[in-house]
Length: 74
Image (cartoon, rainbow, N blue to C red):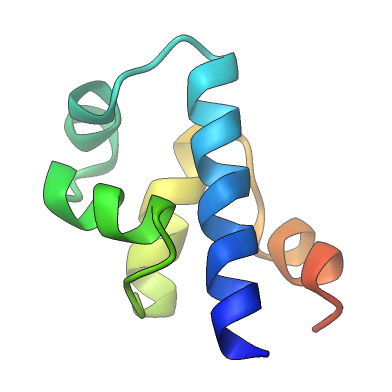
């Protein structure tokens, strides 16, 4: 279940980033999170802290509530 959740969250972040026309380095600049970490999160291979996840998601207009709701963990 955790793997599916990480993959879902990563896919959601990636799709929103692409929808906004941002590249990973752009998101690094506005979020303060390294491109490598963003890559790992988007690929579902990272287990980021909530703080890191919020730093990545917030500039994309994604809330923790939205991320958790869509994964069934609200």
